[in-house]
Length: 330
Image (cartoon, rainbow, N blue to C red; front, side, top):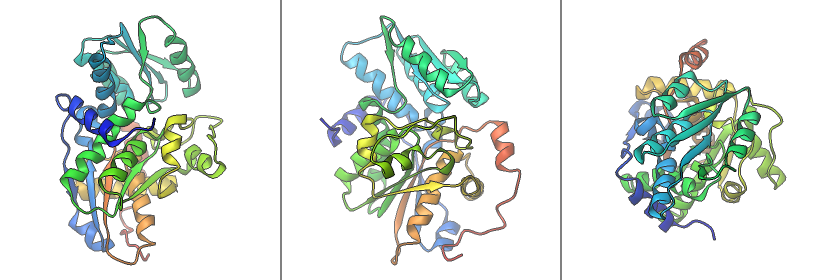
């Protein structure tokens, strides 16, 4: 049975003791330039610095609620999900092991360890994913998948649930896509609470497995680790659960690396926040969608997180994109 708004509401109640209610902010200058109202749900202020805390906390809380307390929790992630599972597990004093690729952000690896998790690094994501599958066979071990898990999706959907209670009348809500958990939860929430609101997704052009899957009508998997600064969207493929929700999106955009960098720089400058490149993709999706609109719109962007290491920062600011003001008619 597909997830429903009741699942999102239940998740919202479960995680309330463990997460932050994040603010919705705006840039008056950006609104003036674009001629539309752009609102940002700032999940960079969330626990562990990203929306992933919602899904992880909901899943662990749900396990405890159903009298399923594992001996160990495991997860596979290139970053924010790793920290989220480590954080959520620590709230219930459950040991955790997180399998991560060696290219993962050092900031995210260190943060995961700081929450008490054992981190197992592998050469690439393919090996990482295989290791976690093998580990999940151990008795007493529970695997929290980064996106293809109903309770993870329900938890991620609480970001939009919260946002739509904070702000009225949204014409479109935009979110980035890695494995599709955030977008799936956003779609479920929005279709129920604000059915006229369009749900728009974005992923890196260099890691466009979701777009290819939507075009082909079946799940397509990347052949190798993608080369993108959007490390939160480096998944090899979407899941069978999330794919069914992604097929219901109103629009889906593939974003080039230059546009990811462009919006990361501009949003950092305008909002005075740490903006992960993955978050910036959603702004480009909104930008492209607004080019097709004739009337003034109110758009919500889910800024998925704000965890960036110095290597990524250096790459992001190697060239200056702030000389080109964002204008829809340019």
